[in-house]
Amino acid sequence: QQKVQQSPESLIVPEGGMASLNCTFSDRNSQYFWWYRQHSGEGPKALMSIFSNGDKKEGRFTAHLNKASLYVSLHIKDSQPSDSALYFCAAHSNYQLIWGSGTKLIIKP
Amino acid sequence: DTTVKQNPRYKLARVGKPVNLICSQTMNHDTMYWYQKKPNQAPKLLLFYYDKILNREADTFEKFQSSRPNNSFCSLYIGSAGLEYSAMYLCASSRRQNQDTQYFGPGTRLLVL
Image 1 (cartoon, rainbow over the protein chains, first blue to last red):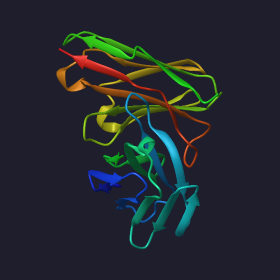
Image 2 (image 1 turned 90 degrees about the vertical axis):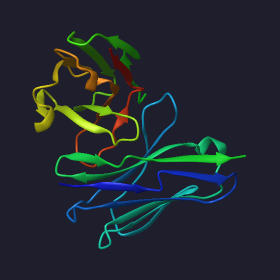
Image 3 (image 1 turned 180 degrees about the vertical axis):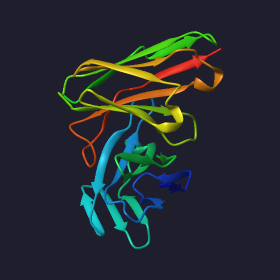
Image 4 (image 1 turned 45 degrees about the horizontal axis):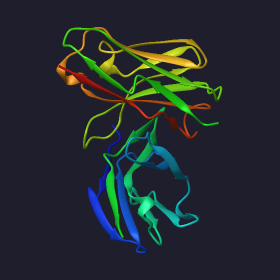
């Protein structure tokens, strides 16, 4: 069964710095990968998806996928205090999303 | 409007009593999901509706029930709450399944005493 693991569990980054979040998955047949972000008191909100190997950039956010290495990452450039949140990686397996347990990102002013 | 609403936001229940949680969406999405989220754990899919068809996970089959009286509403029902049911319950919807974005409500925090 698909397993998704995220690292680190928590991360402190200075404002304006680069945050790098990592995720590994176990099902080589997974095709779709998502990053969701959850602010305190809210539900998770989709940040971006990635389906193809390589990089996908959306504003300050860049996702990277390497299916052969079973690895996906998220990089946040010029981190802002509003980026402080819980970040989830999720991989599609069969008919559902399998989620990691999240990385808590704190941006320090 | 990509709003998913959940009621109540907080629920206190006694062991052995039933619990009913409500979710609504106005995006005309075909699929609605219920997840259970405990601290420091990954969200766990409990069940989902695709249109009127209910799909329940094997390991939660007997613990949770659900109904979807129309496209907009979906409920999660616990017949007899146990301490282990204390968690955040997240409802989500998506246009279809698979690669479509899931839109989440703010969650219902359930505490069973």
